[in-house]
Picture 1 (cartoon, one colour):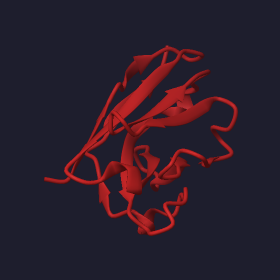
Picture 2: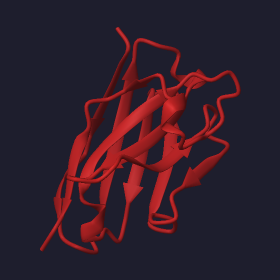
Picture 3: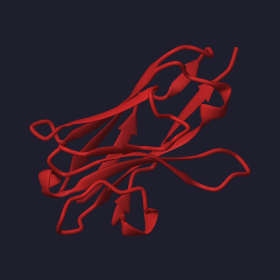
Length: 126
């Protein structure tokens, strides 16, 4: 069964840090680029970051550049999103998704992603 499971969300104060994990099962993880997306209440879903299938290439939204770091461990079938210097505007449900395009390139075009996790809530508030 194809599955992506996010974890690591929670409530954190502004300036704090969280590390999200995306654990994959049921498919050949190393062939897939993985992306993180988020959706805040009343707002459209937006791309946050993506990592290529081999981990050699990463991209970030301008709003998180310098604060968030994406990484992957193909031996553990897991992608991580380290989030530092969190701001209230980072509050959202965060989703990971897998893109099985042949090149395995990082992308934040949501339409390219084949399947998605259920999401994890991140709340940044004092």
